[in-house]
Length: 283
Length: 323
Image 1: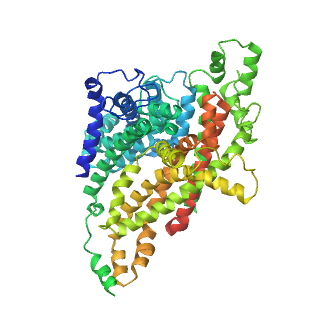
Image 2 (image 1 turned 135 degrees about the vertical axis):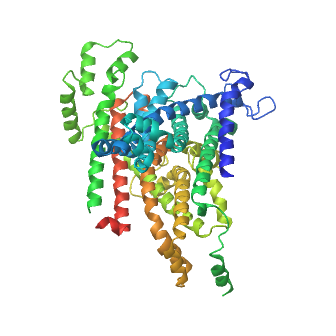
Image 3 (image 1 turned 180 degrees about the vertical axis):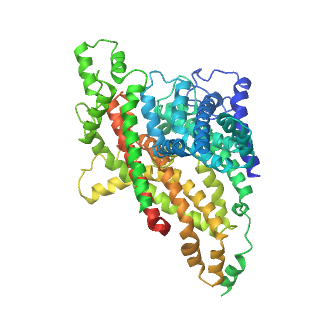
């Protein structure tokens, strides 16, 4: 159930990002005289200070926010797979070095590092921002994948492949990798959400590409356009809500999977503890 | 003790990595800070000034290794260069002025969020199947909310609409800083909303994490045994189940610290709180590279120290690590 709801939310936003701009044919940057209007039939989510339609911005922004999220998650996952699988499979000195590297990136605070790196970018385009986020966001996946590789590498089919004379590269990427695909997929999804959050934070600070509409840049302009002081809640609530909902969708999928693996986590009434407490109430 | 020694070694290594990253970033990123500044000034800079700036940034024609040695030497004397934004103030002075604000708010908020979130997680696992389960969906939602968006919402509701709390600065304009009750009150009053933001945004992770570990622990035989012995519910819940469930919780808390600090940077900026996060943004906006890097270094070291403290707590709580 949780998995279905979570997957539904994620699918909804993915579809909105892909199809939305095709359905709503408007320019998200187009300004009009009708500035700072609350939600109405003409503008479902109201307008910004310069009369841009918030709903149109939200839909087009989804494409940029999710796009940056997916792009940097792809880069980060490739890094994580390379580091995690190679370290876990080869062990020894290679593993030591890669593990330390992973743990260092895990401990260093990502967002300040992203901010500093973005500060040095000559142009802050969508792609370069995605790369910067990916560079700081691969460590968690690498750690999980290393642990999984350790448990898989002694299994019979891996030993058989090795005995059959397959090269190390082939064993790692054609024998072990396919088995780990579910783990890679979960870690990929988590990285997408983390990257969306990081991009939103960066745009909110005005450190990403502000000429393209994304959820983060919407929040940047809302903050700098004094949306809070004017009381224009329809301007800054929707983008943040969308980010939080995507995160919720992912969390639901994860929790649902956890509950399958560990049924105790489900929120049903446990029968074991009840008699004791009822007894206590009576006494 | 071997555990602590190993962790300490790792943190020293990580500190070295942070320092080295700090050294390498400006040298590896496209265009050095001086070129960026010159480009900004449209090239109307005489070569002597460019040379002076390069020296100020520690960029010289010497080989990379010599530069690195010089850099480490400066660092060991606490020299982080001069800030461009607040010229001619030293970066170390700017950091020393803003760091106490951040440590105060973020430190207290993180502790509150940890204690309250963990306690809630314990209760929710213990009282599974009661109304407390209703917290779960809320926590699931809050767990992914961006910090700065929580900050914006709180500013909007409690700052602008209800006018209960101030929405910027660290203390009121008409209060003289000093060891007076009035000043302390003003500081606490101004820190309230930023602190609440951090507590709200970071607590969900603690609740969910602790609940899940605790639920698993409750199924262990020794918990059933404790109940069978007729111990009070409170004793079983805290001294038997929670006592053991806390260990993975501390580990995940330590790992989330970097994330909390990142969120706090954004929170400070929303509230124009004069901490290190606001300074970091000022540094980036003004292309103030010495300030940016100094702050990144200090934040990284602070996170490392906090991680080490979490390790200490782990050692105290888990006798197995003391062998």
